[in-house]
Image (cartoon, rainbow, N blue to C red; front, side, top):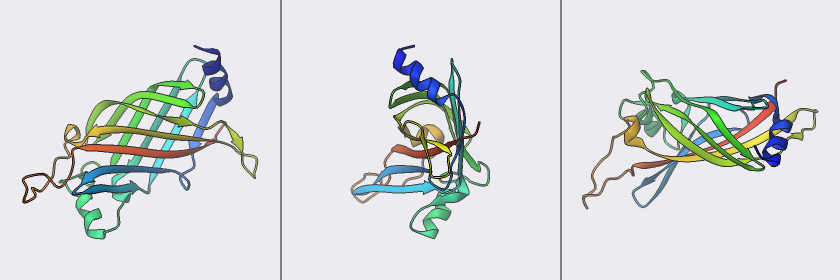
Length: 182
């Protein structure tokens, strides 16, 4: 472990609980001529760091999917997409997190629609800072790209050109803010 990594780990040692008001878990997928974006309003997560390991666990409630159209939100919760009734939550767990100053790389498992696959997420970590009330906070931005078919999310509609309306690759983007819990 490098000196930088050791110093970063030392400043983060402890448990950090999610500040859900300022956090988001979103997705971006190619759609027709652009990018369709959505997010989940109800998310939870926790980071735990000690001298030898950093872990991250979190989830998002499928029924909290937020898009600009109620009908589309209902379709996303149907079996065509996330199947909220049978699989009410998306989950991510990582026990293999590399901290290198502001760069983070985590290898873990993502569960969507009851299917769990290994993924690697990358992003940035902000150094701890005290808020106006004396609470210590950190920020963690992570992203990864997955093939939605790997998770059983295969609905599509053919266009007159023969192309599909929805792309296969989905970018998952998180902005997570944590408060030191201990």
